[in-house]
Amino acid sequence: MKYCFIFVCQEGGLELKSMLLAASLKHYLRCDYECVAALPQPAARWGTVSADTLAFMHSLGVRSVPITNRINENYPIGNKFACLGIDTPADKLIFLDSDILCSREFSPDSIPPNPSSIFGTAQNTARKIKGIFDAPFSAVPSTILFTRDVKRWQQIYDLFNLPLPQWQVISLGTDELMLPYFNAGVIAVQNGLGFAEIWEDSCRKIDAEASITNKYPWLDQLALPIAVARLNLTVNVLEDRFNYQVGQMPLPNDLPFFCHYHVPSAIRCEPRLNQIVNELADTYPLLKERLLGSAWVAQLLQPYTLTEKLSYSIKRKKSDFKHHVKRYFHIGTTCDQKKANMLGHSSGVKIK
Image (cartoon, rainbow, N blue to C red; front, side):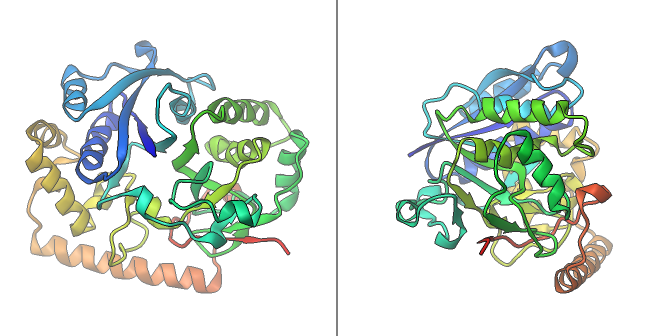
């Protein structure tokens, strides 16, 4: 099976993050794949990526393609819809947020899925899914609940004349059951389904419905399970190691495949991730030059002081304690409350 790993590369913070992501993919991917850097257009709105960045991407074998945000220019997240609609000979498209780091060798064909985490299909079909990305759609549940009010979800599904799903996922933050709601930072989709168009159309319709409130910035994630339902796709509910939220709890002993760090300071708090960044910088001189030229990233290439080590150790212990308390008591927040509880665990269950 051939894979296409695609991410947004645009002027500004995402430009450097996308370079780091591309380097990590080149270093750790072990499969038949291509990498694509999606360049948002027009330049008047999104800026122009530097010639050095494009040259660096080319040196890694990364193909650059222009994309257009057809949702709303003031909604940058809308750029990811176009990413899943690019032309590629690959069987699977894997969209990755630019602030993600591939942190260990990754061979998707050799990783079997958990049969109990496959939904929306007959059991005999589920048995044919052998690789982690074999299902038509794969993603990790969100770390927060959109809402505990099922009536709000009912309102959204009614807009599309769809029944509520007969299965649920577990919030990564608190282990609470919720209707399918996924983090859109890592999405694996079978090519040729027209998923990008259906996802985009679902967003437009939800956005246009005034009675559905509190949609931003979660519009993309609200529309994600709707697109899945409209296409009647089999879903593989992924574990958090495929989209691990760094900075909210210490890393597990076995590094996740994809670490979603959001801000460079989260990498600095995890010496193992920081070491990966240093190794990539030593491998690619241009990347190192660009990292050193950025005040908010250059610290990652500096040695740790004893004070830093002690401070980060204390932070990790506090974070780990809070994580266990929240999961034990199911202390969670929702999108309605506009707070995130980005901690880790993943699975799903059928509604009896």
